[in-house]
Image (cartoon, rainbow over all chains, first blue to last red; front, side, top):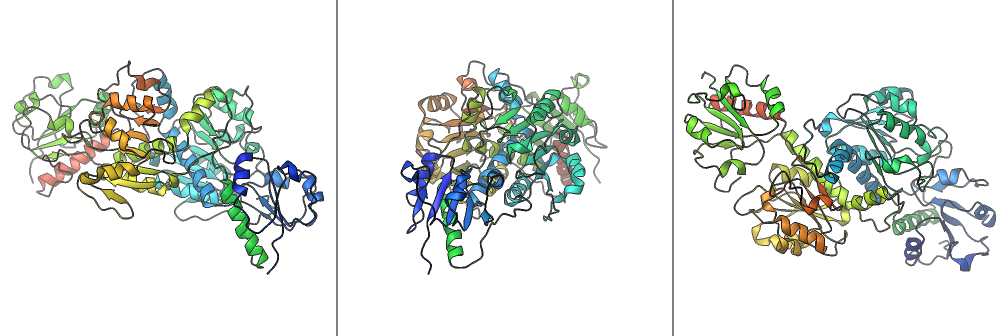
Length: 320
Length: 320
């Protein structure tokens, strides 16, 4: 049996939740939490593993003995862009809870727009009792999910159960039972079918700025909802926010639900805050449960130290 | 083959949608639409069937030859309370679309409260970017569905897929695979388990005023949501609205979504309109699609005229 080598923590989120979760985590293993001032100038040369979210790039020179890097969330763009990133396996955070929460957000927001909630909530504020007569149901509406990884597949399945017509898109064609899917060469066909676009893509060179005016213009016009709706719970860097705003103002889009933004927190001057057909959540669609993150890391460390194959390793070439 | 006998229509809703849907409905059969002034003083003695929603009670004396009564919606309380109601089979409106729409509303509203949307929407209005740290997920929350007919069963199934823990209640015990169910003798056990109460009950002598202060006090306190939430998409007469308001004001309830009210339209002076943890929809959770209603009626008439057994016949004794 190998000795358990130290793990470095550099998670730039939910400070208190991290400290709390660290109390019971990594039994028998030294934990160096860089947010703890007691560890400020610590020698990290013994550290073999790091669990990070937007880490300080100096980590890599301070800890030259790292063997594995764990992302604190599903995305890894915060890591791949770092200067001096060593060539180590990077393991993404995949867990049932994160997946389920993302699907909650996606289904909630698809139903919210399907069921005219922006209008009904405006009417409620004005004390107006008025039923929308033409109420399409889920099967009249096609939801197009971009990104068919663990999160996308779960969302697709649950949207289907709720009765939506669902289509899927991924760069490389992915076959899913009972769902029509499209690949990068057929994105226009995919968009022309889509009434509610759900963005669950990672941020890569290919997806940066993808959701722009020209893409919105290709979505199905005059579908059951009248105008298409845009949901993004992937990465803010994939949307051209000025184009989202313009599309909403011009009526190219009939509504939006956004959990991610080009710059977070969303700037107070953004007109998105005031649009009543827009739902804004503060990058909270699928927050990582930190204690689950640490169990996931521990499970992978155990596999690694036993010489077993690692799971959820990122393909650096494709960026996710 | 029998001659196709006339059908009388007395539907006190969606006037335009009814006229529109009648155009293609009931081929080869005379249709007497009482909302059409041309039919005002019409002799109805030949009419064998009536499709009604809150009909004028004089219908029964004017049309003594009626053989079947069709309700224009899932509920039949609007009919059973009528003076002079003849002893005829009453057929309720059951269709996939109505069922799916009701489940859309139920799942939407359960997710809305689960995912802190009242808070996030308040924050959006105030341009506040703040993530709720303690975010329970669906499996941490028990949804208790009251009423396990066609609508309740479909809602239960979809809530389960979304990850909720689900329990069910009906007057007489109903066994459902994988769901714990309770009957009228065990309502307190059911309520003590429930974080989100979903009311899908018909209005009967037993359910009138059922949702009152004493019932709300029995719901699980200090569950994953902090305080219980009440949803009603059954009938307004089942709720004591003053008690709903008091429970919300006192914090016995943490939120509510209401589609039905004691008096509809909801009176402008109701404090419910202004509560930002309350969602109000104008009896629109599962509006009947009138053209689907007429196809359903036509299908049952065909069965009847062929001497086949009728479906969805109401049990008058139990009131639904």
